[in-house]
Length: 129
Image (tube, rainbow, N blue to C red):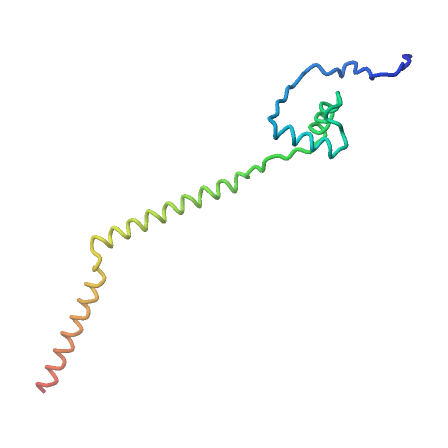
């Protein structure tokens, strides 16, 4: 049985062997100081910042980036492909319209001409009777 004489607790096999060094610029350091003050901790006191940041990092909740499910990414891909197809169809339609913009108008004029000729012929036949 070991008697605790006081002082720092022994870490044993949990000894911290790995070090990470952080560097802050002036504004970042001020933010760290204000965070420490909000927890009523003194920045100038030795052995305050390291344990605080360790607890903050290790006990803090982490947020994972939202991963887009494969269904949604595939759906957006398909929507983009549909948009591309629509653009291609519109381009072809505009090109054909530019080649013969009055194609429909010419058909309508032909039909109107035929109807007028039929009307004139029926009037002529009635007037001859």
